[in-house]
Length: 122
Length: 122
Length: 122
Length: 122
Image (cartoon, rainbow over all chains, first blue to last red; front, side, top):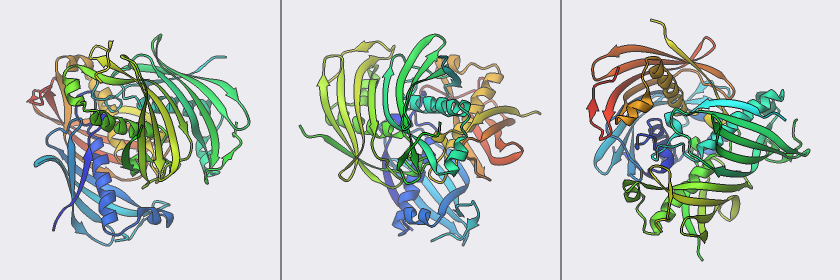
């Protein structure tokens, strides 16, 4: 299966004192990519929200392999690795050209406005 | 009138590549201070939100005088400078000890869930 | 003079409890646009940083006119409005289609690693 | 061994459209707590940085159990679970009163300015 690909640029807001991308910001990068992955599945998250539904991250494992830096042009690759009616697992990788910088496995669920889990709208 | 005082520590998340606090983050600092200022006025923002009301910034002027750095312990001073039924203007200053680093004037309004402006709940 | 145009998508990270873009994040949006504006002037900020130079915001005035929302596709227009050897003033506007949401005037200076102001590298 | 405890308030900046704390921001919360934990070990991170050393996260596993909300007063508990000359593993938990909201295991290394790993300064 081909991975979904999403590109982004590293800006000042993403860096920290160490001159590298701040560790929490990789989670922003892969969430942007998931938003586009969801859109590519034909799902409108705005309409979903209007129905009181939203995706929520339940579990995350992440490996920080090499640092990304200011002005880097990065690619996020997103691949579905498992799915049940209630849970979706994605493998997401952040690369600069061919170099793997960050790798994560993210388990998503769907929740109603009141926080109750519900079936995935996929 | 005595200014309301709020203290905060600068963490890694607040800094950028330049080794200083990223310019947008001063707006986070003064918003934290406004939250505590609002609480000190006896207003419960959670209850306000439940009634469909929220404060919104309408206008902002900011002077960046000296940089704040990682691990600095900062104070935000908040003073009300003008008020009408619809608008509230606060003067907010960020200091490290006696040194003024950042100064802003912030005009706030109150908006309903649908975005319509309404009277300030103060 | 034609404005420099930069496009961006609003993601979850940009929104807050009110369901709108958090007020400090417009400063991130216009900083991304300034980075691309600087690049379009033929300036390499990475090389600049290696020489110990960086741009810093000295002054900012901002008007929040209408809220941006999750999933909006926004355009940032950047226009130079004044320049001296030491200071540069940009007018920056954030629009959704033809609707003006946010407008700012930003004064930039150039600083050395030790914080001393220096001539703009433009 | 007693856990190190650190308290924080949830502000608007931490929330998203869903009305809850944005998932990446828990990483900011636990990083603030680690900064204070490091300080409690008698280590001055500013001095460390001046010597060209910094902590970096190498690996992270996180469980999102229950959502934190605007205005919550949270506690981060930090406990050391493993240590070698090169790696430190911390268990970090975010609680609202007695309710566990978020749990993570974080592996840290120490890196020089050039990115080379080095012995932990602990």
